[in-house]
Image (cartoon, rainbow, N blue to C red; front, side):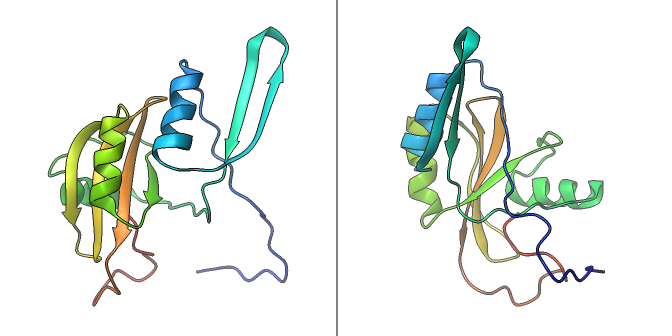
Length: 150
């Protein structure tokens, strides 16, 4: 059940990821994936952060059965860690090829899902497993409450 709030409680979801190779991770997510740079800050001791705009954010809370089902659909086997990041793109095939050329490892190629999206799975910089997905249309029958990306 969704609680009703007169005013949004949260204004932004910000996922903070530690990347040992900061420059490579920034180049991958900003330049290859195309997330615009919103801000960058430096601090003492070579502390650096770049904030990238990833558009609208959602937080999907999946139970273990749903997580297993998504892995089966997208990859054909259980591979996802506890946290996986999904990015909606206009062209999943082109984005997957571009990201592999930029250093990601393809786990599974773009695959049509039952919820009418084209999803690929990649191991990406900063030790993230990502899904790149393209919405293909309105699903005919989707689980209630599932908003379609993964």
